[in-house]
Image (tube, rainbow over all chains, first blue to last red; front, side, top):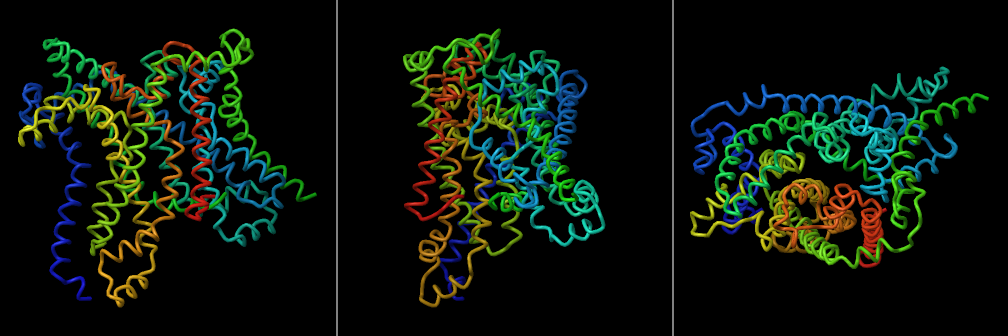
Length: 297
Length: 295
């Protein structure tokens, strides 16, 4: 055990810790900076004085975001989408995973169903054919365009299926002998013990729905139907216009946009809060889900 | 009789999923045929056939050929960095004795992974602008401000570095999980033979980590031609199209914004076919060269 106490080892440990602190700080400091900008005055931000602490502390940006219409409106759409979308995801995943967790003998054609679902993980029609299907079904500008195309997340369904396979078979057999039908077994026997598994896949679905901005952009023609991430995305576009104006020497226009920085920072920060709230749970379940998902289906 | 009744219920449970997947995955898959048609909204997927016209048109466009090179350039460096960086961080973290400190670092580096590219792009625009935090720090050590997002020479590297930065936490967690599975007895016997920590890493840790590294590599190879649409779309601007425009952003502008559905789909199809070949090839190589079966 001398090896761990040698001088070289001690130096390594110190360098290692310093290196890891630097690495992890690069992941945290940008957000702290964003937070500081959001609480600072526009003049301090334009002057480039804001580091990791707010200058001229004020909450004007937050007041603006939380009282001005569009931020709250799009956030409500996002909440509606998450509730509806994750609800549909969970129901479909449970209904699909349960028969697939059986063997080919128990459910005729089980392997055919499995191939049917697995293929969609390997190949897809891509952006435009999917867009055309959603459009031709008349789903544009409705919330269904955001929840139906990904209604059954196949990867998460397979994770759930693997959780179900790990349960002892005796549990189901006992209920079956008592005359319970498959649906009764699923609802009364399996679901109560599957709570941690459902939490795992449910959390992934929440993050996926919350973070998705692209479907909102292509399926919503009316900006009043934008979910939060799509609305935030429009704020970024103003910013890229600003870069161009700066290059063209249009400083006045650039300065006008600069004052939007504090407001945008506040809205971006508010947009991260829901994910931050569930982050501890995500972390707890993530590795578990990863390991189970990789077990062959 | 009883089994028949049970069977019926299982199939009934599968119906909603099958229908939805059929509508939103299989019909678009069939819709790929419009790559060989002149799409007309009136006739839909039954538009007149034009053979390979859309493809010849595409490859005659210098802008499209350029996007292929941009995509490959950005994606290859992302792929390499996306494997190397998390392995190194995981190895460094693994050297820590305290489980608690290990967990804290892991939690911190994992945060960016769960935020959308919209949020990340907002953060990056804030810190990478000409008078942003990064340029201020560089200014302190006497480096002229760099236009990270507005200079077409720098832009691809901004994409590569920030993509690795956002994603390395995920890989780190995966590799740490793999590292914790290594039998400590192997290190003990190596120590008896006088192997120092560095040699142990080279001869024990890395070889045992190889299957996981290959798995992660193969899985990400399928995305090479994607090169990160969410990221680039949110950070690029016309001034960096020359080096920053990738296949997916090109498809979006052509297909969705200019409504050239057939040409856009042709690009999508080209991309999927190449990805499939790459994934197939990497499975084959992983099996033959490293003797490792992914599936």
